[in-house]
Image (cartoon, rainbow over all chains, first blue to last red; front, side, top):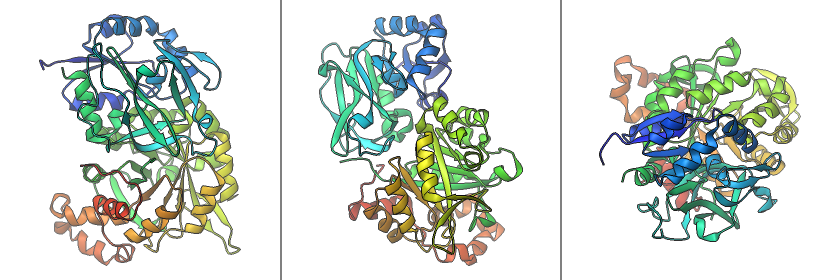
Length: 214
Length: 285
């Protein structure tokens, strides 16, 4: 890899952007935390991070005119990573607090985990495994879990989960008690996950390297 | 298959130092929190819990620098508590690199603060710390300011209330057991687990691996926060780095009654022991 490889961490001003920035910096990437269109477009990879509520996040994304940046960056074919809320925001809509439209890039909906099972403890907080549902297809530019075996744990913290409309978009599922939910999607140049690779120790770092070190 | 039980080293902070005491009194300086954090990360800790033990008494926050330094080299969740009084305090901690904040005193004096904070940052960012002290009549009361002041609130009803208000997690501390090495209060732990559906982490009293197994094998706990057991292990492995021998600190620590009743165990040893006994744990190879 010819460094510096520049990664835009898309800043919509409600998240902790520093965890992902720190994790990428240690891996040797040049990181820009930005909401500026041309800066984002000039980067080699982009990340939509996220902690916070879906409606608040969409409000900020609209106010900062970030929809065009996100759509155009994805259309450029360069690696794009969505994390946690940044994964959920890619979908059509969410019922968190109130029905809110998302970015509509991946077909499907975001729902509260109590719908899976009224008895499970929510939020789903802690370290859980991911099971691969498919291998990359010809249109995928990467295989983020290439070096990850089925026994590895990743850090999750969320109360909502996604239901992709197209099962072909599902890359991994994760079990919680007797239920399972989609824990990541893979579509063309987009990998997005419910867990936090930047908070998942060395295994998380391997995923980040796999996505951006090409 | 499900979530692994989180093993969470707890770091009590006073100014720039890691400290430890008995019943949250009589604090002893153990060393630099950054060194402990890095060691625990490398040993496979699932999260780190920081508590500024003087912040709510003196109305200041000294943890931010420690957190921001740690967040640059430790890639697991960091939860930070002590002196979180308003939204700005939460924002500052998250900006420094914390993933979650833990609130006690401000939640008791103004329960609406819990809803406000969870609406802005999401429930999963807000941990409510409950410091429980058993009363003569057998009931448990939630205390504030590190076990100094009674809130008058009964622990179980307070736990239910914080869940209703939007807390994402409860850290239950057994003040009577803290630093004693006598084991957790499993009766109260069960009552709180049964009362709420948010994750519960317990703290206070772990003196051996068996104590931790006793709690995690039977109770639906999300995690266990542990201080002395791991701190003593760190000190045994890092004498020279931290300069304990030069300062004669290690003898002091060895003779300290807060540690004499406590086995030293590494995170890895503990996790392998729990795994052998069918408690789901993450081993970081």
